[in-house]
Image 1 (cartoon, helix red, strand yellow):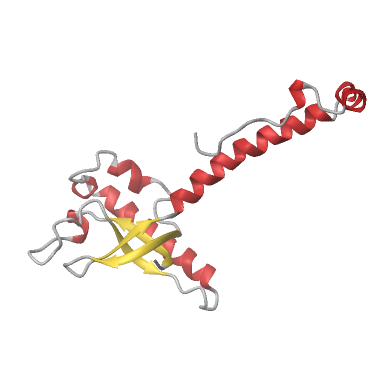
Image 2: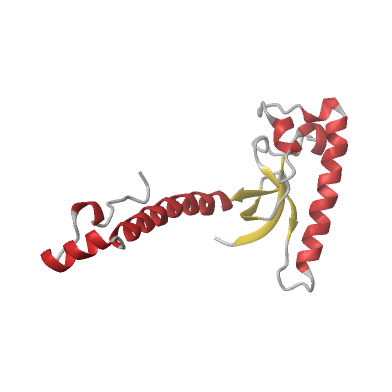
Length: 159
């Protein structure tokens, strides 16, 4: 598996078109707009310019009612109207039988893990703050262990 930094957009038959050669399973996939070369000089500026260009494209599409209907996604208008619709993503690129380059996004896994770790970090900070209290420090000195409220919180990362 090779992951790339990409810009991609949801496939829409009214915007991208479809013909007899197109793969039947393309609807619902993300089409590759741009594969980003990190070795390129000033790649951050290049990415910002591309994102701005695609945002202008989708502003024009939103002004034309017939384009923001999607055959399977009901809130397609809200999705493409979001200013963060086109953004840098980590994804796996592959070609369908109709030579369309599509992307399977992997970035959302990072967001899930970050969300879980924020909860874990919050629990650990709360535990440390309880241990800083003078009564709990004194209890530890006398009994050799923390009081029940200061024990390490039990947590599961994926529950």
